Amino acid sequence: MVRSRKLVLGFGTALCLLGIYVLCFNQETPLSSSKVPMKTFYHLTHKHNSDLPDSEDLLDQEEINDQSNTFSTLDSKLSVEPEPKEDSIVPNVPDVPKVPDSSDVPKSSSKSDGVGKTRTSTKGPPLPQPNADGPTEPSYIGDTYMSEILPPQTNCTDGIQRRVAETEFGRRFLKYIPVVQWHQHVTPERYQRLSKYPGTHGWGGIDYKTLVETMSFLNSSANQQMLDDWKDRRIKSECIRCAVVGNGGILKGSNKGKEIDSHHYVFRTNGAIIKGFEQDVGSRTTHYTFSTNTLMNSMRTYSGAGYKSPPKSDETRYIFLPDHDRDYLLMKAAATHTKVERGREKNKDPLMYFGEDVSAKKLKIYHPDFVRYLRNRFLRSHTMQTKFMNIYRPSTGAVMLLAALHTCDQVSAYGFMTPDFKKYSDHYFDNVYHPVGFFVNHDFRMELSLWQQLHKAGLIKLYMG
Ligand SMILES: *[C@@H]1O[C@H](CO)[C@@H](O)[C@H](O)[C@H]1NC(C)=O
Ligand SMILES: *[C@@H]1O[C@H](CO)[C@@H](O)[C@H](O)[C@H]1NC(C)=O
Image (cartoon, rainbow, N blue to C red; front, side, top):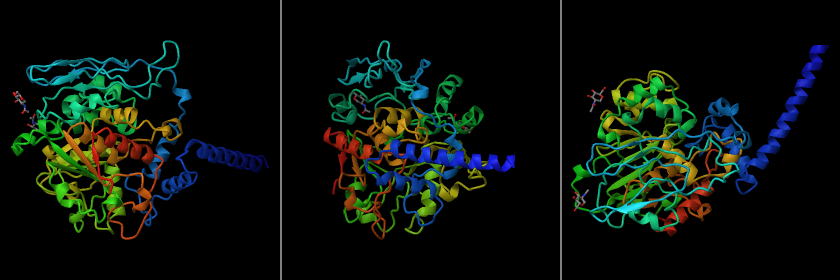
């Protein structure tokens, strides 16, 4: 009797909670049209449905559950912990100035060096000034980053790094933020700072031992730089030109293949299917960006369209976007030509994905400071004030494009979302029209408008059909 009453009571409570949840969900995810949240909800809950057209950047249901008890609101996190001071790593390069930490305190200074280049300190300026007595940034934002000076790879006179200061992006752009991490970046102090941030924004998802062990394989200078082979290419050009290729339907019939391939570097991501589409998307890949999760999703979802594995060639580098220890474990397996030792990819052979020729020199992994910086300063979405704050991140394609913006002198972007995206299918390789899928863990509308702003500021050249 008591038991069944308890049951009824429990059931009633569950219903109530569900009702409240649905209400909150609708209020907290205004992805501009009221239809979108239902759609995203559909995507999040029907992940394993094989008809699902768009899942490359989708989180697994299990991961959502893993994180559901860490969802919290902005308000509950408003107390501010002081960030530990970060250091700068200055490699053995003579005549580079030591750069002070970037910090929340807006300050900016610049000076000219002997060859007429202007070095701007990484004292980051952009975000709203903390009030003397009012609340400042919630601590999970973490707008303090490592800085690292690498010698400039070119003397390009009108490169992005030179021009950005005069644009509206000058104040948020950090010239000395490391784009990729390598073994020298792993220290106990930095682990203490970065383990506070979950997912791709920190080292919160990985234990220190695994981190040290896996990162020990990324110990060559090739692992420290995105464009590691520029010197070896012996190209006369003063400026490094990069093509960054998204998978958008706008590329279908574009005839842009030759133009894309004529750049020094060609970046691609996720379901980048090349065979049969060369005319429109080109054939070279120098940098392939993915996370283990998106790679597995791409292999599952786009196999019918012809996606078998990441592109392979002598010049191809693989850049992991780590949002889990899965990424570090797969990276280590690829570096050592061994099977993945544990986790969801246990016993998988990395050579299946990256080919027999993969070696540690061809692998890179984005720095969590870089991804968190992109989120905080370029894609600070409203989603971060919802229960999805812990799963929100810039999309894989956005990280790739912004990484090019921080490493190349000139960037042309193809296959990224444009304001008329509804005219085009989701992907260039779709056989029939599929509308673009929206997900709660990304903010594609914000990304779309960022690409427009960067294009208008003259920092990227965006292909708009
Ligand atoms: C840039 O120019 C300076 C001065 O001419 C030269 O010493 C340096 O090697 C050049 N750097 C590159 C990467 O070409
Ligand atoms: C990097 O690590 C590998 C494997 O531990 C080692 O064989 C190699 O000598 C190291 N290279 C450098 C430059 O330290």
